[in-house]
Length: 164
Image 1 (tube, rainbow, N blue to C red):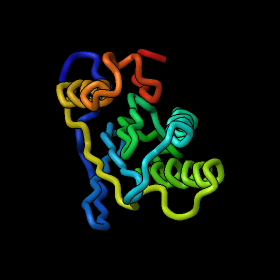
Image 2: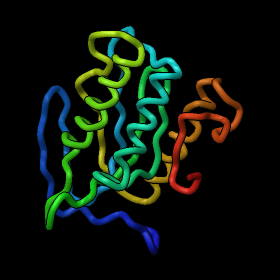
Image 3: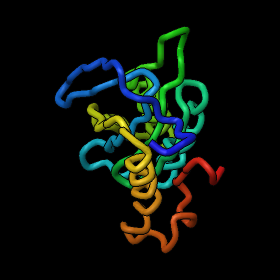
Image 4: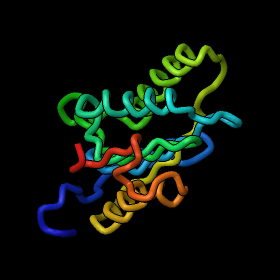
């Protein structure tokens, strides 16, 4: 790893599984993707809500390195914070906070009922600095590749450490 990196070497894991395996290591950085429920497109008001929800929980339950909210999915790069001595917030706790809070607000704002999010998340541990920068680059250029904007900074629902 590069000198000055904030990534920690992997020493222990917690693994749980729904349909997909979820590996957790205290203090790791994660790349997480979650999708809107089938047939559900996130309109601008819904994008505002989920984007603000992600930013709201940052520095309380996790350190946020980057996120982008697209019309059918969300990408986040984060590192869980310590909940208590030697205990970190789990991805399950973090994702429940984000998805539950935003779903309730979206349903109220849009006067809709039913699922907003697919239950399962795709998550992976960011293993080194190269992977970290590759993932951040992917997030930055997601709206550009989708043809929504010409430059990442033109996209309203994009955050990365350094542009705050």
